[in-house]
Length: 192
Image 1 (cartoon, helix red, strand yellow):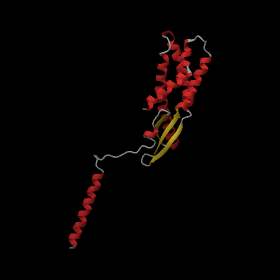
Image 2 (cartoon, rainbow, N blue to C red; image 1 turned 90 degrees about the vertical axis):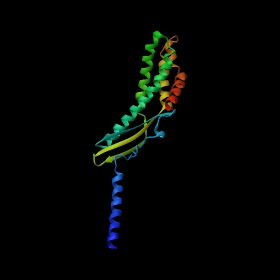
Image 3 (tube, rainbow, N blue to C red; image 1 turned 120 degrees about the vertical axis):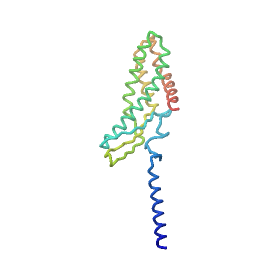
Image 4 (spheres, helix red, strand yellow; image 1 turned 30 degrees about the vertical axis):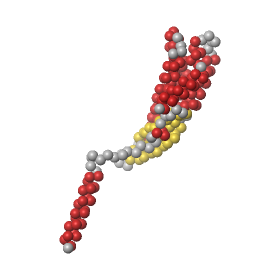
């Protein structure tokens, strides 16, 4: 009787041990959680958003890397929108003025974009520390209001328009309302 109980105990131990080995098999899929990601952290028709992460031996370094990467992604998304806006406006300018118009448009919008990117706000922030590697990983999501950016760019274009002659063909690329409408159309395309 005692031998039977002992044998049952060993059998249970071996069965449970086998299941432990199976759980660590290389065929097993492990789900990885990425903070500050998902649908609510993506660009929409109203805001530019970006998620990024950074790794460093110090927490502040990891956070700085993550924020820098997020701003870079936002800048890339802004460039996509501005490329569409620029193409629309360049179609209104004759061939002999197109390069001059493109330079002025690009210069104005880049200046505003650089100023506004520093105003991107953090909407999600989480950090982890890996004891084995002794590194911090920071996860962030940032956003920048598309309407505020469009307003600043349109305002800059409007100021530029005031310096042009009344007959200047370039006045067409500084049409405030057309700029905002085209910008919003491009934002909707990006947000889809």
